[in-house]
Length: 127
Image 1 (cartoon, rainbow, N blue to C red):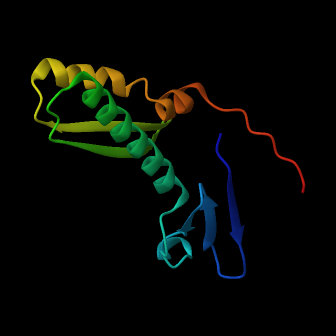
Image 2 (cartoon, helix red, strand yellow):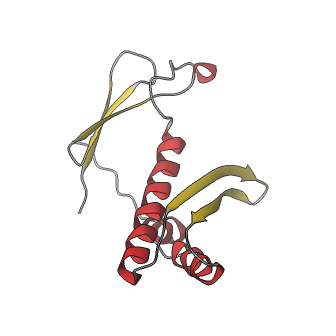
């Protein structure tokens, strides 16, 4: 389904990622000893959720023939006493309130949303 690689060398925290044929640099901010050369790992997680949300909702609106003008996805990751959580806010232009409510409902079932909510087993092996 998907494949990616990540490689870190001598530069503190700068990680070169290749996924889906695209190169991405991840890093930590200077406050954590990095150089801020790219998004931090949790930033990339939010980017994945935001992209999946936007793409899925745009596809749904197009399939329905709705006049969606624009869609913004604002994501906030926070850590509380019950663990980590994400608040997602949708800014939708061009649709009526009923259509907007339907897209908010669909957002709860996008592929990345469902994966994050369900959890995902991860196996680690030595190469």
